[in-house]
Every structure is written in C-alpha cells, then in structure tokens.
Image (cartoon, rainbow, N blue to C red):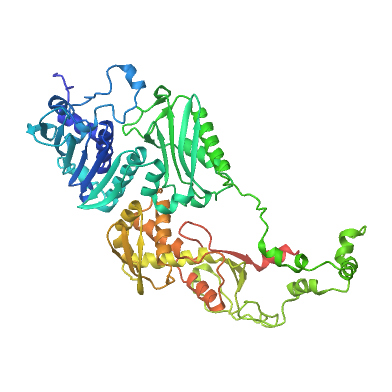
Length: 617
C-alpha cells in the first residue's frame, strides 16, 4: 500500500494557522498594531473600510525593513525576536512567534510598503494566498504601511461567519483601545470609511484613559502606584461611584500586554468589597511590570491568556495595591467634622441661657429622663398621641382615601369578583382598592386570599411581551420629540448603538446618526417619559452589554430584555389607584404573568387557608 501521510502545502498550512491567529478583522488589527509598536513607531494610523472586511491598513513611522527582511517577514515562524530557547523567557516585545504576517497573507490580499531611514528607496510587495505576486523598489516615507484587503476572500465559509459591520467594528475598536492604552506615549488615530473616529495625542496614561473612556471619568480616577523588588504595579482605578453594571472598562496589562484574568479580577473585586454593590463592576486600568521569566505568555495563540510563576503573590499584591490606593485617597466613607453654618443660627446658640430658661429646662420630663435614676424608659402617661398610629394599624382607618389606597372595614366587606383576565392562573381579582407598600409592592385581594405583586417585575413582564410582539410585526407607537435630544457616546457605545439601530427603530425608537459618535433621538416609545430619552438609551446599552456575556440569547432577545429592564417602573415610584389597576390588569393579560423573562416571580400568592393556619384557626 502506498504511503498516505504527506506534508501540507505552505498555503494550506498557513490558512490552518490563520484559523487560530486571525479569527476576525479585529484579530488582524491587533497583530498589525503590535508590529507597529515593536517597530518603535511614535505615530500609528489605522485605516479600515467596511469594518475591516474590505481593508485594514496600518501606517507607522517606525524603523522600517530592508528588502530582504520585508520578504522574509511573510514566512512562517520568521521572527527577529528569538534566537534560542532562552529568549522565550526574556520577551519584552508584543510579537515574537512570526505567525501573524504569514497568517494574514494566507487569507487576504496584502500590500506592504516599507523603508529604513538610511535607505534611499523602499520596498513594495504584493502577496496573495501566501504567494508573492510582485516585489519592486518604491519611493515612500520611512516606516511601514501594510494593507490587507478582502479578508477571507479565498475562504468564503469563514467570511460568511463574520457578523454585521457594526458588530465587527465594535471588536476592532476593543482591540485598538487595548493597544492604545498600553502605549500613551504613541500617537494613534483610527479612520473608518473616511471618517476619523479616534485622534489620540501623546500624553500621560491618565490623559489617554480620559481620551478613550470619556472626560466625565477625570475626577473619578484614583492613582495606583506600588513598587517592590519582585514586581511593580501602576495605573488607575475608579472611585466606587464610577462602578457600572457591566465589566466593560476593566483592563489588565502585564509588561504592557493586555491580558484576561478572572483570577486577578477577583483580587480587584475583593479590594472593593462593601464599597460597591455586589452586582456592580469597578473601573480599572492596571499595569503589572515584572521579570519576563516569572510569566509565560506563550500559552494561547492570541497571547491574551498567560501563566504566572506564582499567582498567589500577584493576587495578594494587586489586592493590597488597590486597597491602599482607595484608602490613601480617602475613598472609604468618613465622618465630617465641619460645623454646619446653619447651626450657628439656632436659638440655642444665639440667645442667652437665662435662669428662667434653666429652671424650665430642669423641670422638664426630658431633663428628668437623663438625670434621675430609673428613668431610662420614662413615658408621660398623659400623652397618648404617640400610640394612635398603632391603634389605627389594627382597627383600620375610618375613612378611605384613593390617594393612599387604604379603605375602611365597611368598604372591603363586599367581595365583587371581576372577570378573570387569564383563566390559567386561577386567580380572580376583586374589585377593590389596591394598596402600595414601600413604593415597591402592590397588595391585591383575590377570591382565595391575596397576592403581593412586585411592581418592577410585573412591569418587566408586561414590557417584555409588548416588545416581543413588536419584534414579530406588531409595531409600538412612537412619540416624536418636540425638541429632539442629541447625545454623544464613547466610540464603543456608538458602534454598539449603530449595530442595534434597525432593531430599536422597530421597537418604537427613532434614532439617527449625527456624525462623530453623536446621535439624535427623534422619537421614543410612547410610554417612555419625555426628557429621559438619553438616560434611558445609555442605561439600555449598559444592560445590553451585561446580557452579552450570555451566549444563549440572540441579539434581539438581549435587546428586548434590556429595554424591558430599563423602562420598567423602579422601586420607590409611588403609584395611584388608576396606575396600579392598569398595571395589575395588564399583568394578568400576559401569556405568562407569574414570572419575568429572567424567571423571577412577579407576584406571590397567599391563600386563605394558609393565612388561617398562621393564626392557628
């Protein structure tokens, strides 16, 4: 029998390798930007068309390459960073394995222009499907310009798996931000379809963070700076009030390389314990600098997951550094010993304490309570007004008030059931006034006891089914704004909103792009409070990013759940009788009134026999 094992051709081997290294346009952006950084560039420009599907170009003013190096750079495992095995444990550069350019050339049409400062002419190379199509001298500026066109042109199955342009652009922005944060001393810019969306001048780390994440964070950043013989840590963390419901603005860098580490994230979360809500995530941009021999960065194709020699030391150091920074800047609650100026205006301060007033004060019951023995629980018998509210509690008020929702005993004596909106629930609501408790719950009497409704959960279920129906062709009424609101978003949120625009327009929103990450809100669903549009959309985006970590939901499902959560009535909202009745009636017309989309109960039922058993009846 003939031999059946054979070596793969280089172009096929490169395409297989590209499957690990170049998963989407953002992967190529990361590799090309890191190569530009390694070339010691001080200015790096990223140009993309059609979210990188048509063009990704990185232009830098770095060292450039000679003609031979330019040709060798596209060979597999060709690298200038490693000479022997020991070099693997002394890596300070971003790239080192020599896989990126070979992988890119295997799945795209690549053009390279490069020139060294001492050379008179540069080199131009065209490569397609790992084959060199053209190589010739060219006049160009010092540095390198590498353009990859038509990503996955020769692997159509891979191209079909790419997401929408807005979704792919979000991933590109994420990768760009990670590199730009690592090197604030380098100028970066991003041009998408001819429009500049980032222009990051050289500056300090804090300036770079504010440039990328927003000016509003400037007063909310706390500096972290700790040095030891083993490692250094520096960067910034956010004050507790900068925490969000999503973990988007969290960045760890080890030797200037962005990494993902749930272990180190846990260390930061522990440092914030009891300072932020359990479901909130603090902002941090932290850099760990340690000996390269103490860390292995060669454990994942994208180099975003690394292995520490001693993780426990790193964990303890990160947690201590963040705690120290928060304590040093007095972030923890403190007592305010400054005297309130209004106290100076009180009669007790301004007017003299005469002998008559002294005698009057010493004869008062309050004075006796504090000065005489056995008077710690002294209560004046003649004053019974303080007990009146207790009597009304168990006897019931004598008059009913629609504003409070309470009724007299005579009013609640008759039981007149109304038609059951949802027979499957088996609950018949009685035609009586509803009671709101703690501006959070609604008490409703039924034919077999009563139900306690969580107003937020109930409204979430109602809105969820309303938006679900709209997504399947039953449009929601749109209320056009008399004065359209304009909002400015970060680049990441702008890309996300652009991706969701068509879905939102079908759910009652009218949002239009306004250039440079700005949007105009022309209209909102009719039940959204006017003047609250910008806040509602910003919070909806935060909630959508929170849901994005759950892969089992479609984009539409995440959006519908986010809108339902954002627009639902929040705890603390006082409701009148009409509002409560409308809410309860709409709840029981839902297909599944008892739970929210997240399977949380909307109400709890208390039956008569259970209530009687509580009192031993």
